[in-house]
Length: 120
Image 1 (cartoon, rainbow, N blue to C red):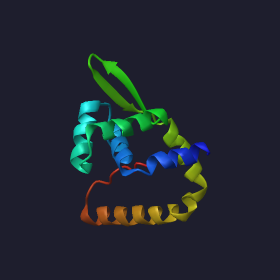
Image 2 (spheres, one colour):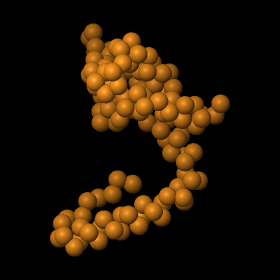
Image 3 (tube, rainbow, N blue to C red):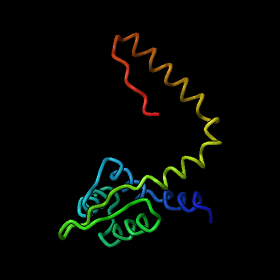
């Protein structure tokens, strides 16, 4: 299995994607992650812990001890691999995103708002 295929296997699970969304905003204690994921998916703490283990083992998350707490952080390296794998396919949607950005900018100008910076 290629690195990209393994990454997509990890990303294919909605619980793991939700955990990565949390970690994209910054570090979180395992208890915080468990609370959010239990609320969003109604799964047990051991199930959340298993998803965290999968993310650690696949390199998407790093963990460090802070006293009795475990603090998780996103490791972006596997996401860069996914991004690189997707690169040849961007031509299928890039022009549509550019057109959307143009329409948004046009609407902003018409309303007299200050334009927002692109995240791309």
